[in-house]
Image (cartoon, rainbow, N blue to C red):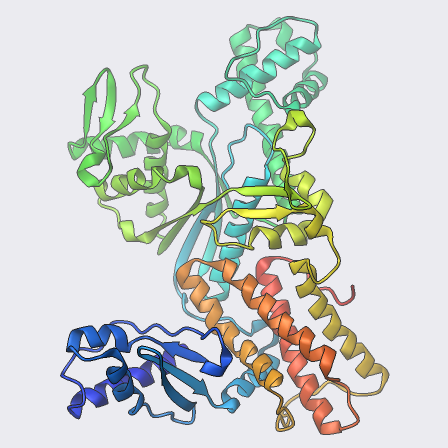
Length: 553
């Protein structure tokens, strides 16, 4: 619908210019259409007259009036109005929105799906938590965002693959091995100094106990270095097992699990550094090997090989991203924690240096989660006895609430996750409120069946739908396909949540004031057709969020 309206507006601008009402002007490269905050102002509004006014040297309102006067509705636009300093408000014909009900009922589960990305391959790498401990709630937000974004892109027609990058090389893994080794020795009554950079969590003791049970006294009998290496590898496996179990419970899947170690084993890291060296982009200083990243927009040059001969995480990331590009995707999406903000320019610098298409990479940064209980912030300290793991949050509030609450804000804004609110079975709980709408419509259908009233199929006379709320609900059904496309283009899947809240709020209000099953057969059929379309959209939207659409609550 938006594309059609944009073409109508562009044609009106062309007419105004051709007929001398506006000076000759190139059409704008894009037109923004927004929904006004008050539906009395129309279904869509555009400010296109304002930037045009600057170019032609006329008042914005005058430009808006010239454009508005030449808009031809074509059976789509019912009313055009100029408002404020130069906004053009468009009200669509009722039949446009009621036509969306027919499309929704006809397409069912496929309603809303687009072909925007048809033929294009996307790789989304997200979460990629280090295998040094269990997933915490911050990881949960990244996992939910990545999975839901993948769902949205698939709904928009893209071929999407999900990838988890396992950081299994470097100092963090060495610290893990030493930490578990120390706890293992403690279990045998041996005193071993605990490493200063060690991992303190209770899970380290649990892993040590499991390794003791599996391997017995083996690590008392072999050299310490060898013991730590074996323990490190087994600890990594155990932690990854736990991560995969948590993700399965959380309904997040991955198509690929890529080990950082494989970049070394397959010679990919050496290839990447050699490629930079051939371009004259590496140099030695202070015993280390540096990449000339300042030549490509970074704030300073970066070390890729330390003075002690070990490679940096950045060197691995250069190799990893080079390998991603080799696989031939049309779009690469990285989802990182907000603390990686400074990392983005150096990765982009490496892509430019390697001659790769930097514009194919999209990086999303995800802010923190504030865990709340009854409006008060929960301590994140394990020592204080408060849980922080994703699994414990899921066990308290459920997967549905967990995924939904993580999406309450845009990725670059912190989100407050109130545990008590997430468990509440009332309209105050946003996920309950949405799911209850689906259950409520399902209940209407059961009552209809009990009365021998069949759900309408095929052509239905929607003439009896004359209430403003009915038009409003039909409009929200009609907005769903454009929303999917807009979320795919903007990488903002969180927009599903306010859309759902708005739709079900209007539905609950409508339901409380008007009966769906009436004595008038025609009115009943039309209203059943309306709520059937609403149910389809709510179910399809909840499916994108990865949560259940219950029949009863």
